[in-house]
Amino acid sequence: MKLLIRFRLNGRIVETAADPTVRLLDVIRDEFDLIGTKEGCGDGECGACSVLVNDLVQNSCLIPIGSIEDADVLTIEGFSNTKQYEILNECYSEAGGVQCGFCTPGMIMASAELLSKHPQASEIEIREGISGNLCRCTGYNMIVDALKLAAKKGEGLW
Image (cartoon, rainbow, N blue to C red):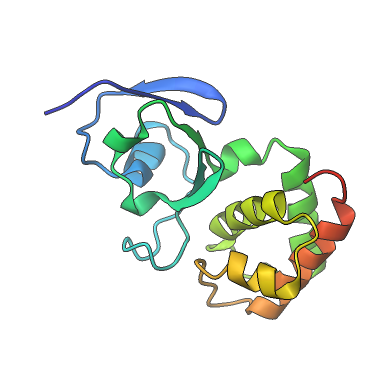
C-alpha cells in the first residue's frame, strides 16, 4: 500500500508515494538522487547514513519513510550549503580527519548536531557525539582534533 508522504528535504517541501515501510535512506538516494548519504551496514551501527531529522542526527537506514510525514530532513547535500559545513569541511581537511571519505558525510552530520548543542564541546563530549559513527580508515583522534578546531573557528556560529 502506498501513501502520499510529504516532508521537508533540505529546506524544500517534497512528496513521495513510496510504500511507508521503505527506508528513508532508500527514498533519499533512489527517488531524490541524493547519494551523499551512504549505506554502510544497513543496521544502524555505522552511521554512514546519518541525516538530521528535526535537527537530531538519525540513521536513515532505520527510519521508515511513513514516519517522516511533516518532518524536516537535512542531508549532507543540504548541509553543504551552510557556513557551518564550510568550517567543518575545512577543519576535517586541516586536521587530517578524512581518508577514504565513506564515513565523512555521516560524521559531518553528527558533528553538526554535536556543535549545535555544545559549541565549545569538550573532548569527552566530542567522542560521545560521534560515537554512533564508525571510521575504519582515519582514526578518531584526527576527527576529534577536527571538531576541536571547528569549535574554535566557528565560535559564535554554532
